Length: 88
Image (cartoon, rainbow, N blue to C red):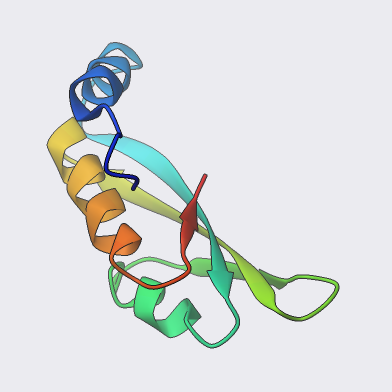
């Protein structure tokens, strides 16, 4: 996530969107070859991969049961540490 990301605002939106635990869908655009690094953040979840038409990127979708908004935010922060990853 970008350094100017408003964690508190996003947490508030997550908490108002439903009750935890909840099934949450993560989406990332990942440089080709980095999808295993993102997958390592979600070892128990099925990951859907779709290569871009040019082959440089892979669209990555993961559905995971989350216990709290903080858990979601922590995973986004871990993903943002992977070079080139774009969180959607």
